[in-house]
Structures are given as structure tokens and as C-alpha cells.
Image (cartoon, rainbow, N blue to C red; front, side, top):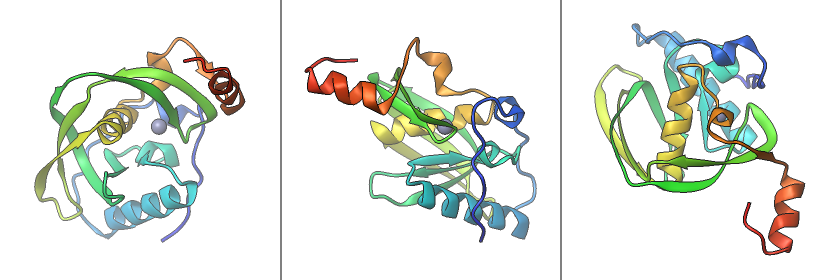
Length: 164
Ligand code: ZN
């Protein structure tokens, strides 16, 4: 396992469409392990392979029980409801923006051995599924919001009792 550098907005790898995983081999297992170690160190809730410069359809999402789910070749198969909330990204450090997402999202994916499974997330987990899967097509959350805030700005707004 190795800690990888998280690329930030402006890096060309973050705007590329990633290729599907075809071989469920040691190289994939190493990538999944590196993503998990890097995500744990960054204390994030999700990380996609392109964020560490690997253009493959692989993401990690932290679920409601704080387990890290490994999603290989994930696709959203159903979604419902709506939620609006502040969203951030390890590739857009120190900035947050308000983004509308579905409230319940079901993803179909393969595990590290190539077996298919489905998993459903609500609220933050649903948001995270949408956010991470978009990374695989070269999109960032900043495309869905008109204004970005710093942590300081958000603290000041909260102190004044304002909603961003
Ligand atoms: Zn992100």
C-alpha cells in the first residue's frame, strides 16, 4: 500500500473520461488499497482513481457505517428524491459549494474480484456516489454550483445565522 498524491483542479487528469477495468488482478487490488489509504489519510468520504492520476473507473465511497466500499465500473441504476447541501472535494481544497443531488441513489458495480453487486445510499452517501461517479467522466462538483465558499466564509455566515 502506498499513499498517493491527490491532484487538484486544473490538473488535466481530472477532466478525462476514465476507461473501464477489464482485469481484476493484483494491479487493481493495489490501486484499491492505495485509494483507501490515501482517502483515510485525507479524512475524506470518497475518492476516485483519476484524483490520483489513474484513468480507470474505480472509486471508494465511505458508507453510513463508515465502511469503505470499493466500486469498480460503477453505474447509477436508480435515483430518487432531492437534497440540497454544501459539497466539497479533496481535489478542490478549502472550497465548498451548494449542490442539489438525488436523496437516494442505487449503484451497480463490480468488486475487486469482478463480481457484480448493488448498493444503495441515502443523504451523504447518495451525494458521494453522484460526486465520485462524475469524476470518472471528468466532471467536478464546481460545475453544479454558482458560488464557492471558503471555510472562513461559511463560519462567518453560520455565526450571523445566515444560510449560504
Ligand atoms: Zn471529488
